[in-house]
Image (cartoon, rainbow over all chains, first blue to last red; front, side):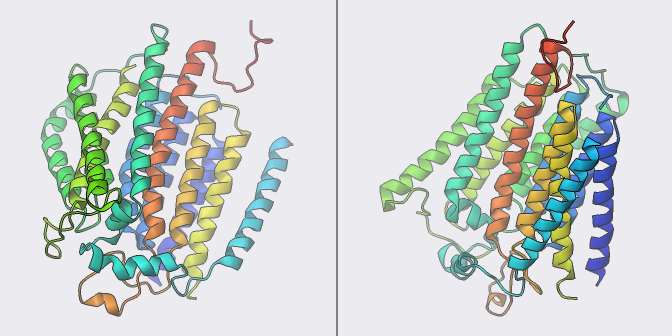
Amino acid sequence: MIEIIIMCILSIVSIGTLCFICVNRDLITAAVGTTLISLIASIMFVIMRAPDVAMTEASIGAALSGAIIIGIIIKVRRRDR
Amino acid sequence: MKRFVAVIIFAFLSILLMIFMFEISDFSHLSSGNASFVLSRNLSDFNIPNIVTSVVTQYRGYDTIGEITILFLAVTGIYMLISAMGLKSTGKLLEPAGNIVKSASIILFPIIMIFGIYIIVNGHLSPGGGFQGGAVIGSGMLLLFLSDRRREISSRASHAVESMAVIIILLIGLIGIYTANIFLVNFMGTGMFSSIISGGIIPIIYSLIGIKVTVEFFHLTEHILRS
Amino acid sequence: MQNTLNILFLVNGIILLTGGIMIALISRNIIKMIIGFVIAQTGVNILIVASGYVIGGKAPVLSRYQQLAGTVSCDPIPQALVLTSIVIGIATTALFLFFALRFYSDKGTLNRDYTEDNDD
């Protein structure tokens, strides 16, 4: 029962972040939103009984992928769709 | 107007996909024969606690060798793109780091490295392994590079370490062909259950993969921040 | 009631997948296109791992020597495939971003509708 409540909250947050990325025009906000979606997916992998995949997604998908995206955005223009 | 039509089309596609997924999925029992085969024969073949490690290195070993190749190709491609861009690079330079990052990174880096080595070495006993631990140590080296931009790691030494790790993995696989006609077969005996020296060649291969992934993630992020 | 958790996994994976593809097709900036693809890859990984879930799968994928006879455990093969898929995803994302940087340094703009006619 507690798993269903946690899963509902995580679903609402991740779908809300997806809509927010679609509407906004700033690029660094979109990169931070991507990192947030990866972290929420990592928590979902624990609820799905997959601890190896959760560790991989947290360290590679959230940390390194977010760092690479922000590292490139700094070198180009930051706003404007 | 165009955005509205696109939203309608994708809502329709997602509802269609959901109906299709609910029709074909049945979650009350294991639905594939492969899973029962792996789960029943894991203890008698390899005698290690972590089933996902035995699937990644032994039952689907070719996929792991293909993945190592793809990572290597990506890093090589990025290096070639940088050297072809030459002097016309775009970049605004990054600002130097403040005092907090400089003083904290000196304390944090040994702790991160010990944690990463622990995850790599215990890959066959608990969730973990080469990829996870390699990403952790790679992020630690990125922190070291961000705190003081003049720090250099000699690129010839790191390229040599990475190449030697791949060559040793392929040599171990070829020894398998020599002894039992199967590539990457487990030719050493399996030890006690749940001790560090157990499971034949599985800890050796995963540790070498961990070393290679560490060096590659560091090169990936260093090229981006330095160009 | 038993199936609610699985319905939530599938709904979340499908919405992330189609939403990510939609962001990639609508946007005019190249880097926003790349962010859409990253979100779509995350959605696909969630779908693959959720397909191997068994209701009441008590033990995760660690076995103990005495308990393996009685317990039901979840499917380990999709988890091994998703481990590979996450690493390949970051490799292709890094190359894609580097091509976008090269595009910006050659032409000075990040618009994907750039042609040589309206360049002056």
